[in-house]
Length: 243
Length: 243
Image (cartoon, rainbow over all chains, first blue to last red; front, side):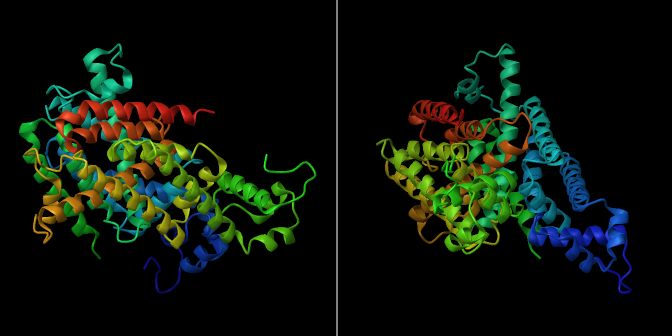
């Protein structure tokens, strides 16, 4: 689908072919020969555009990150409260993998090469930082309970409550920790949805997670509203996953 | 460390060398040549023991699963309530990867090849089934809130509350869904801990997740007990991760 009928090769066609091959076979098993054959270009044409398979892979991750940023902008433009935006963003990111070949390949690259490449760490770190920012806004909006209701503040158990920043510092530690949990859940939901037979899809795993988190996360009077928001977002992104 | 001084090769030495190479380079980049060199055996010796690199990889996953089963037995033998056992098991599984070369390599294999191999799906499915069984026991022990406190039952949002099994069926659906969330979190905690600079380690991500889940998960009078249990388990398994 990324090829012209006359077989002429362009940078975009090579990249599309690389995404298809890497999405199917994975980074390490994807051969440049296969990419060249699918793109219907000469080897010289590929190497005049990209130094190596690495360069192709890094550009695929860049395209995936661009799509992730678009997903973020779309979620943020809704004008919804920050925590609703975060919930919607997490499900949109989980659904992204199924939406096009660059996202599928990018997701696979992020998983396969993650302990060796700087570009992967940068991509994951950016996702987490975005989550943490939204959580900070959510606290400002009064949508995070944060132990203010007499529930034990979970972060105290971790820091021993001795942070020099006091209440403010504890709140920020909670937001960073929660951002890491959300990132882990988004990644894990994707991997486990692929690996487990009869698994719920990634969006449904996240829906379930958010519903389980809400009682400890948002003030009681906002819970019905957030239960609705989680269900609405899951329905929307499950629909987008269908072919 | 898996070699004898006289350089003689055995099945166990070949497997140990394969685990070291696969743990370091990943499945696809791991070459049989490298494994042969590290194990100090002749190619014929390797192929008389293992048909292929695939066979080596599958046996490494089997060893990893065996260690996971040992972790499970150790957690279950504590005589603790089922939910405490589940919490401890999840952290032990997350810490496993750092405990020896077979677990590190097995974890990497589970991640890299997960959408193609039956043995991977079987391994993940077994993990999830074990989690679901423990959750069923936890409900019998009265340690799962399950909407009984007037909190919205999260599963109703998913099933529409129309399951023919009624309350029993909803409870089982909640346990299966929660088991999937725990599996996703264990996997995601491991991947994100590797990928993100200055990330909390996998055990701490899970500690944080459990503390966030407790308010929606366990009856109020059991919360202080479980906050203690989560902290205790995290301290134990973080210590085991240290070299």
